[in-house]
Length: 118
Image (cartoon, rainbow, N blue to C red; front, side, top):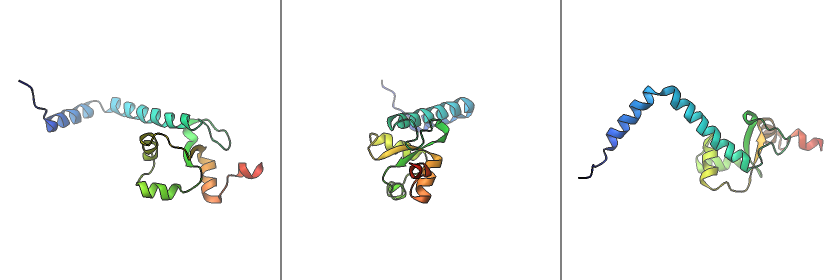
């Protein structure tokens, strides 16, 4: 005779396991998210398209032609959800890697100072 799955029992077991293994679960989730983010960064060049910064902690994703706010509102995404959206949609064109400084300068002033220097 075949067992019928009991979702509530499985959910309770998983919750119990996570509570007993908090540190392991935190490390796993952190590494998982970092690997996903690294996959996206690597696909879009792996470094800031403006200044060449390569340190992972300084990098972000940018909408090449602007419109990021409208896109995030339309798709109801923010923060790390952008990474999930990109992966779910097959890493579409129209995005690039920028460091946070270049990305903020582009957003606030329309262009990064590195672009003006050239």
